Image (cartoon, rainbow, N blue to C red; front, side):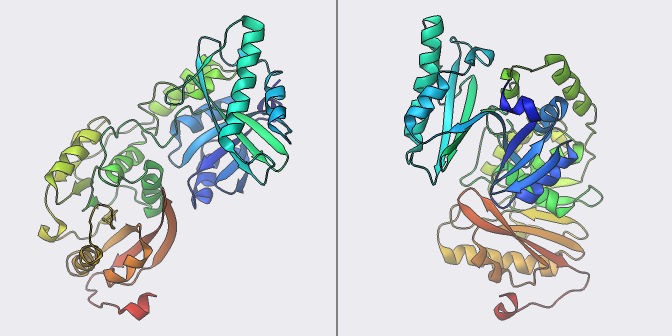
Length: 392
């Protein structure tokens, strides 16, 4: 019996600074006894909840099922332990596999070498027992394993998600610096938008925030377009239960009304990219897109704005980015009465160029960027601008 089967305990990997959001979502999807740690959440779940979490989670990156924990003071321990696991309960010699490893405070200092030793142990097991070995495929393997070594202890897990859960399947085309889907989902969640007010992204790029808003409002599971999950390789996988869970989630999908989600961008080319990405989702035709800069929009009152402006990657010179943030701040002040703005600044220092007071500042990582989500409340009749000292 594998370790996860003894106690129904799993580990969810989460993008940096999103651990609390990930824990809350896990609880909503049926997880119990959750415990936050660095970039992840430990939790317990029955099979139905495990399938539901993988299918529906918008915040999590991967769900790992621990197979075994063991003392690991050398790479020989990896090879020796791997040769004793009944791997045929998980996959066959005809299938492919990959291993991702991490090491911390360990006598084993090279994660790639740790992966290689574990691969050798798995290959030796199949060759000794069946006379042939499975192949390694680092791009699109049938089965993914995760090895984590800390100090003198190792945990070997099966990745129940397969590909990372941030890959929804709708974004086959991206912009110059696309926002990660899990981060976009977090922004929609943090905005508390419920569809009662219109939502607009005035610098929508390839449309990631728009796609996540559509899926959130309609209750479309995050992995609605995904065909395969790693949990199908668990030895106690129940296909009929998975089909039931999937149907229950799909039956909760509701249509998108006209006029509540819209996006625009100065580039007509990226608008076409956004349209292509949206077209892979149900009800995409209800999202209004236009190729024009926000400066040309006459007004947007009593709504919600979510946006990820360019910050150095999609625009070259710092002064150009600073001017863009200043112009957007003026736009909010002059033409967005009664609107709440959620602006993601991948470079937090750009905040002061908005020139408006922020009611919330939430740290949020997007890949290598340690950015911040700013909330700006534009009230009816508000005209005051704030100086830089008030913003710091």
